[in-house]
Image (cartoon, rainbow, N blue to C red; front, side, top):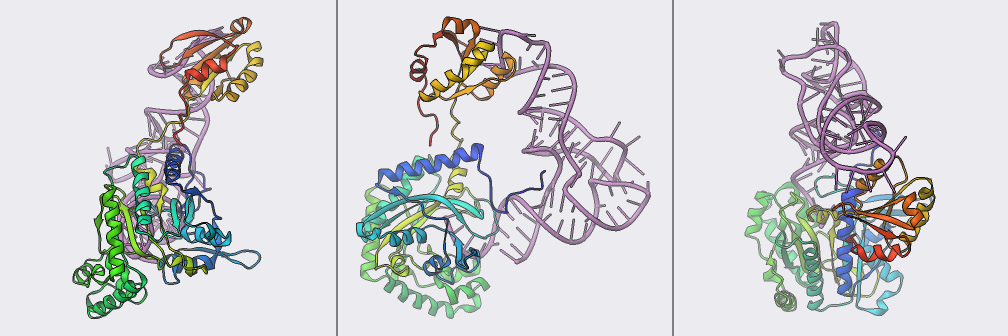
Length: 421
RNA sequence: GCGGGCGUAGCUCAGGUGGUUAGAGCGCCAGGUUGUGGCCCUGGAGGUCGCGCGUUCAAGUCGCGUCGCUCGCCCCA
């Protein structure tokens, strides 16, 4: 074992894992395009302020999980722990608020300083969408539908559930928070240490504590849903109604809350029981407060993010790599001609593995290991006739084809786009 | 930051109660096969047994420490 290792919580992506990864991203990208979402790529690091302002100083992400550093110019920078803040920053930086609503898709690495475990790494990858500038419940519905569509397109039907809740508008949320804190203050003795800390910083989070004692207290706590004002209640009803129209099944989870400060109204998660402690596949919601928080004009937004590794782990057999055509030259004349023939074929869109090393048997072995579908046997005899012998490596059928027009003969014979991404 | 499990070849793993040159399967390289792959046969390369200290005549094996991986807690995708 070499003592040169990757940084804890990081992984090299290659082979099957890379192909799974590409499939997830490709599937999501194509699906998002069907809904009119255009791809955006923002830098993987931002000024620390971007995340501090958007996520809130007291969130776990900001207080203990950020990769923060100072560059040579003394700027305080952070490797992005999530991408919504960065996307909104880009929207503001580029004046994109002129063309609302904006529909954006992204994919890329995120960084959080946490102890790695199953489905959780320090560098991980997310796909996500943001719909900025639409305040209507139908926007929430479309965003959720897109998430559901991506999971279906990945072949994951039946392996996840959609949970949904409403945090209400800021007024409802603040009012409920006071009620909840009042109730919890009266039951301090029964709360876990963690929750006592949350009581100061982020009381809503106590609702989804896994501690048994906390759960007992929460079970009798005043319900968020009962403290929504009329507007918030109507909004949530419209979202549920819209999902119903689309036949998207969901269960209401009154204890589903968000750790991040900018969320309002809808909060949702697609969760799976198959990944141990990391059940969330897609998590998202409405963040009407975020754009303002980052210094822009009050602008509504809704979106979600999904962990690519988590989706990749669930998504079955990896797509196979492209099966090339193997070109097997035998003899000095053929050897000289081979590179040119390979070049012609590749320019015609045919993947070619040129087997130029060793005895004929070794060259065929190469072809086999490259998982070639066809071998083009090119000996000096064939070359003299201006032909190649084509061998189907699956069926062993052989036939002789003229070199002239070989590109089109092969192109039509081969199936297209074996890549899946 | 806290707790459990595990570190032997590129990969998956064997190596009763300590005992001589540390093994297998898969994979890799080559030969059997100088114009035809998969199967088969033969050979080869590849190991600081994670690292350090200790116990012992003797440590892959026992003890302590440490590093790493992994699963879980917190939190999250």
